[in-house]
Length: 450
Image (cartoon, rainbow, N blue to C red; front, side):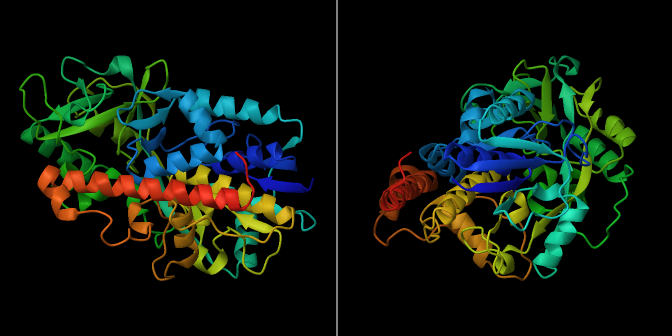
């Protein structure tokens, strides 16, 4: 079989490398860590998760639930490892990120036709088919080459990381375990704030010094805004965002608090908890001072403080087609967050799709995009066809899918029977059934057995 280079051993690159190696191709997997670290990574492991440990909702009728079903049908390597190393997270799939990354790394290193090559790559070898999966923290030399190759169309946004708290430093006489509305196990630790505590926290947050940004024209990514940037938009913004108290009954009062901070387990042993939605660019000394104003975190020990870094992605609609091939550049593909998808799950899915497309191309099969009726196909269609104006990375969303046939659902009857929620669930189930049906047809049409 053919030889292919994959640059970057993040979630997308690791998924693609595994799939292509298992299909019999000789894979050269390049990873610059540990020789060159990024502003966010801490280890040399493949698939290191830096911003969060979550692969999002497991709700089977949600966009991410449907995407997981598609990935399971396609034999996703990353999804299988994530399930193996999952930690309690309510109705979401979250992992022990260290154990997960180590398992991914060791599994890749044992593949006989995969050659792991450490060190930075400044430009691909023109003699080899190449998949670039370097992620949003692509090193400058390769980013400059990519920019020149893609006609200068390279964009940036700022991304932030949330702090991690040591579990035994949380005051559980104040904090309490619960999931919203009692759904599933009580997997989250919740720190409740009354009105005065919230106002005091907000005042301190807004007044706290922030880390300097070197590129003032680079925007923040709207799906991962620093908490202080959200607070700048209005004093109630946090109460309707990451500090939303809805569905959380404080056992001391029997009522919802005025606001709440949720912490999600970050390691299988349960010793570390991530502050959900608390991405921040506050200076480290300010983080300790401000976040210890949160009830239950007065004596918090931080295993990691938040930080901010610049991320890179290409202007995908002008650079890529729906098979992730670079327009006008035979034998060159991009995938993962560099290609304009956002999220760990979406990145892994993008890597799997790239492997399917590249395998077909190397076997001389004309490229065919995944069906738009699938969540993965709809996402790849979006990034390759979206309007160029204000293009930014995209998550998996049901709104990207083609509408269901008119009359398929009786909207009025569903609303009468169970309200808007029943209609939403029925619509999600219909999307799911249609997605898997179209995916099956796509695979059988290509003679792909998985």
